[in-house]
Length: 388
Image (cartoon, rainbow, N blue to C red; front, side, top):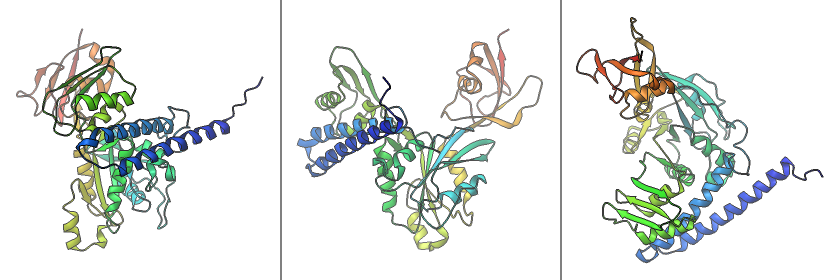
């Protein structure tokens, strides 16, 4: 007999499932808000956070098409291009479209009314030989992590980026910054943070093996870790804490869906501020003041994007020819090796790798013969020698 399943029925079921999960999250958040915060309730609050994190991970999987709740949505699945990707995130009508046009020359409709951009619009910025894809995402609103204003699709697209520019209107309340941070954090985006040094390995049996290398002063213990793991239906695991961490950071590691990425707060429309107001803004960390309309301070913004992405240019030199300074190979690693460089070109190169000649600040002699573990510096020149 013919199946009774249709796309519309599937969508409806997915929406009903999302609403059920959102209702559960709302109940848990309400319980968390009314629970007193003290030493005695630390573990209970941690369990509530674990339940919320688990439900949000399921919602995220649905919004990215991994689950049954539908795909990312039309216009949000933009193919990656260039050496890296930067996303523009912010409230509606803060100047994201104007900034995209200024940086890349790509036209994105801009107007004085809200929600002008309804899809993700890509553009490419060329800087220091690197091709940086800029993604103008639709404006997000409070409650985006719960699906308001296609918020989950917007945040899911933001997770595909290597860096986020949070565009803020200088004339709007500073609470906008905290709201956006809260919405992004709700879907596992950790801004300007580093992953905690926590070793977590699931096992089939043997119970929980807990070890802390340094004293824990933020409430994390064997008992709290075991109870949190129980929420994730994990009964056996190895845990090694190499630093002093709290319950939230442990949940992030167990949940396994957090993305740590650099972020800059782009304070737009500074042409409408006084010098005194600019001095106040200057106290904010990770910020760049600009005027997208007048194209003020764009050089500093591009420089900071480069620095936050930790990008590095390596030039290739074919045997018997001059180096190719027009098309550098761009690396993102903090301490990239010759092996990283080869893998960036093609995974198969290392199979025939013999040694390399390097010119630049990373070597004492010009040139110098090096192996695959040699650490490269910005603007080094390299020539690969293959096995005969």
